[in-house]
Length: 314
Image (cartoon, rainbow, N blue to C red; front, side, top):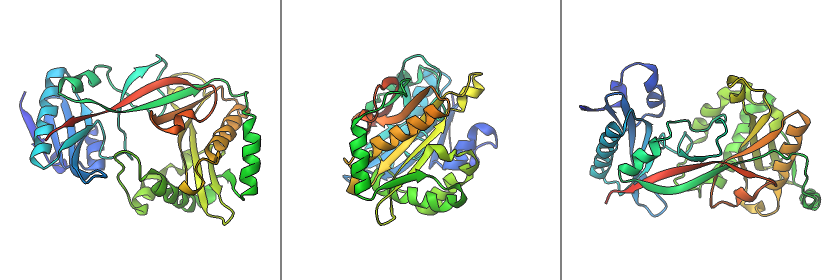
């Protein structure tokens, strides 16, 4: 199959390339109906250059091997020692493959792809590099009695929390951005973005945010010190099911108050709000398998596992 190597602006103006135009790969590769984008020249915490392959779609193993081999060759020629994927440019965008499931239907924001795609990457010389986990609990009634003491301790320290104020959504997003910048900067393959880019990415979702499920915490000085963002699993409606599942997508607290139990309290608050509003289960999504966040909450069971792959090029 002839391989095409194109700039983003050379891609056909059809819907399948909309993601490419939004995330602007450095190079786009096409082989028949199969395609991927390549980003050059990221640098990790040790200063090693790495590349990223994303917006991947493969019709079969042969086309996939052709694409991934060509992408790795390009990255090597551009000085990259390692390549990661699938990742649509950076970790602010969709990334990872589902590599294990309990068999339940996918939830909102979750990767969806043919089950053979991870095997295609293994055949191209990639290996699993980072593992992630989503869990679910159907027991929203059981409370952790230890949190009574934790809440009292947080109150004594002057830490409070409340729902997001949608009337000042931009200002609230700016608070979340500042906490995210500090908290996530040490995450694996983190790529920083400036505040205007962050706001541009999330401001359009104001009409879709239910303030009951987004909490912001503030310290005694009034500064935002943590947040939790959750959203109903609206994909259930498209699946013809009742909307009875909530997804905890992201939570973070400033380094200065970590290990004080704030995340556990926010998760408990959201679970109880979900229960009061008729939800029957809560998902905690996309946690790195080595992160302490996998231990937050009670009575969680694994729902899905995800893998980010890598390949050494040097």
